[in-house]
Image (tube, rainbow, N blue to C red; front, side, top):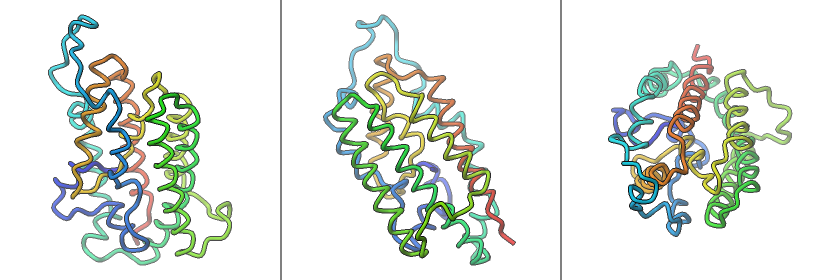
Length: 241
């Protein structure tokens, strides 16, 4: 869930993306290649909203505002014993295995939440994007299930932190829809690859959407903050000794 910027600021670039790469490849939470499905969205082009709604754009763009307001959680996630254990090659393999089992269920449940968001979306561009996101999550969790010999997902007991994170995503998919613009809720949950430029498109999209009155800054910060706290708690819940 850490953003590309967090990854670049971190000297060892160690997040869930790196962990996933150890097993079955890059997590869909890190992928930005699907952003091209949003290129046709009107929110990818800045509009002169000053004349339209009589307000000036904020001094700080929404993407930068979200980043600044949640800096403490980015740092906390990177300093968890789990991430530091990976960095220092001291993490107990059982702890890594426990994380991967939890993450496989997280992605399994996330795919259902994305599917729910897609069913609620009315904008055809966003629906297509979410359909592609759903498929990427489905392919990934199925690959994890195969790797970790998981036959029945219901047999995996989730920790409280992972359960709460999933519940937050479900709440977002169910109750945080802003008209036809349903993608910003996924942006705040994204895992961005450090070698991808796709993040700039997401930032452009949400910044323009806020300028046009579609995204509420306070609501976006609430969602983003809870997502970052979910990531911190998820990493922190993994027993490292």
